[in-house]
Image (cartoon, rainbow, N blue to C red):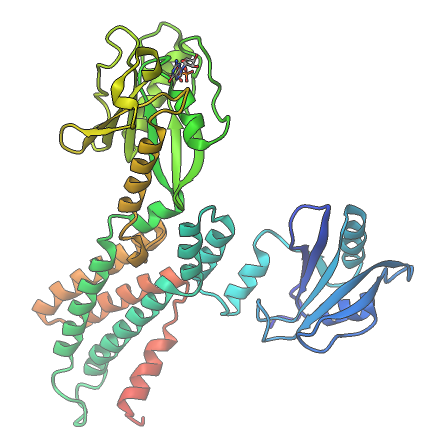
Length: 455
Ligand code: GDP
């Protein structure tokens, strides 16, 4: 470890004031920090109660639980100290100030503890992303997915695949480097190509997941669209169970797109309330309509809300929502005494489209709509548990790997060993990028371990 590398410290718990505040220190000076602040170093991984003193004035700042995690058995792999203080503004400020006066210590930058964990090989890049997702997770399904990523869901696969590639590469390189040796078998290239082909199929299968894993991070997108005053904002508020949009009796008030994050039976969803679709001379309103159309186009589901009490209200279908499922929601049935809404009956009409009769104002028919939405989300995410690709970055790395394997297999027909090796190496590098571990030493290790050439 670099001895000139600064020791970093930060408030690791949430916004004060709170019952407890956790301050963490990481680096070579962590031991000195404990000695200066509490006058001793607790036994490894055991909490001790201690007075925290200002190292300059000797004044007692607080009484805290102190912990000591010597390297390498710490979260970052470096020496770490942790203080669990009373979570008041002044206590925290005094402790952070005191830490700032200790030579070799400075406040941590965003993500710096995790960065050190990565640099010290405690976490690979996909686990780092999983950790970030776990902290950001808002629904149980997101939490489960993030935790699996933190524990190496895609990272373990990538390492396994990379290992297979390195073994294939070792075969081809051995053939190239030691072609004249009597103890190197003739055909090492064919088994390498067979293994590359199997790998290509396996990675391609992982990619063919309908992007469910990526979507689970962001949630499915449900756009609420329809003519002005149909009751879109009122419906959004009901679905989101809070006053998110401004409900107004004047047509054309919802001028921008309002986004509300919610969950449907544990699955994340983003509801978009779009500006009323109507022709207008007001440029601000025109812009609202344009944005509304754009967001509805990218939605997984469009709820097309109509006012059944208006003249010709129930008619009309969005033209722009190609590619999305569209459900027609006939609203304000309370005004027309519509019989269909009594049990909130759902009437499937044409293919992939459904019609609901509701009153967003009184809540009639909302249970059926809610149940259908939950079912939609559940079906949408039904295959997610098996998805391992949760970010566009993963997808790009795996697509690049498949492309390199395709080039490798094409070279296989030509039999040019150097070019086959080059593509295998490229594929291994792509996978290495996924986990953040690109290391040619690995290749040499395998060559010398498996072939025992003794030179
Ligand atoms: P938006 O322009 O489509 O977002 O429509 P709003 O949600 O702002 O609603 C327009 C007006 O219709 C408001 O005065 C609402 O209170 C009213 N409204 C919405 N839904 C219903 C409903 O189901 N029944 C009745 N009677 N009025 C409703």
